[in-house]
Length: 219
Length: 80
Image (cartoon, rainbow over all chains, first blue to last red; front, side, top):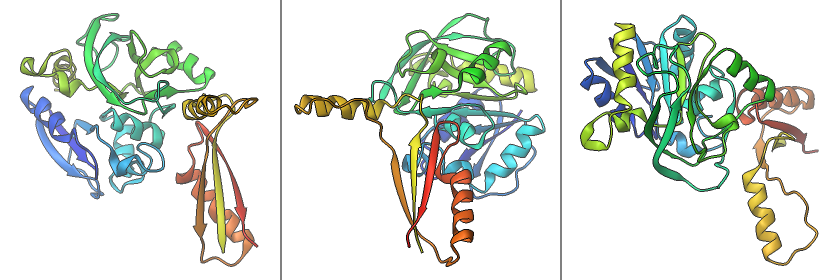
C-alpha cells in the first residue's frame, strides 16, 4: 500500500502516523501542503496537530491549502482519506465530511486515553474490528465537540456512517460521535489518535488494527 | 474601503464559551444576565471603491473562508 502523509505548518502527528503505517508494511511518502500534484496513492492521511495555530477555526486555513484541491479530487475518485484529530477538522472544513467541531463542552483541553465503541465494521478502516467492539485510544484536543444538524445526524445513523462513538463523551459531541465516514465510506475523520496506540511500548495497540486493516483492504 | 464581518454561531448551536462568560459575570455579581453568546468581528481594508462590488467580494470571502456555514452565520457592513 502506498500512503501519503500530508504535513501542514503546525502538523505535529505526521511522523507518528508515518511510523505507524510503515510498521504495518506501508510505503509512506511525506507530502508538503504546498504541493499541487500527488503521486499515485492508495491512502492519504491528514495528521493531527494545530495547523496555523488553530486561527480563525480549527482546520479552516489548512482546508484551503494548495494540496487540498487534489486531496478532494482523489477522495471523490475513491481513494481512502483518513483525517485524525486536526485532520478530521480539516475534512469537515472542506466539506468532505458533514458537521463541524466547536470547543469542548467543558472548555478544557482533554488529553487522555478514552474508551470507544466501534460503531461500524463496514469500511476499509474499521473492517478489522467487530461492530460494537470496545477499544481504547488517546484523545488530545480542545475543539472536538462534534456538531451536526438533526437531519444530518439522522442520515449518518441511517447510512451507518458513525465509525466510532465515545463511551463517556469527553467533549460534548452530538450523539457521542468520535468518528464519521463520508458518503462513499472511503473518507474517515476521527478525533482519537490511532497512531498513538500502535505500539505496545506506547500504551496500547488498539489503533494499530486500523492501519493493519487498511493494509489488508487496500492491498 | 473598510469593512466589518460579524461572525456568530447559529441559533441552536451550543456556545460553551458564551456560557462560561455568563457564569463569570454571575460570579462577579452581575444579576439578570440571560444567555451569553460569543462571536467574532473581522475588520478588513479593501482596495475596492465600489460598494456593490465590495459587498459581493465580502460575501464570497465569508462563503469560502471567514464563516463555516454549518455552524455560523455572518453579517457584513461597509464603512461610509
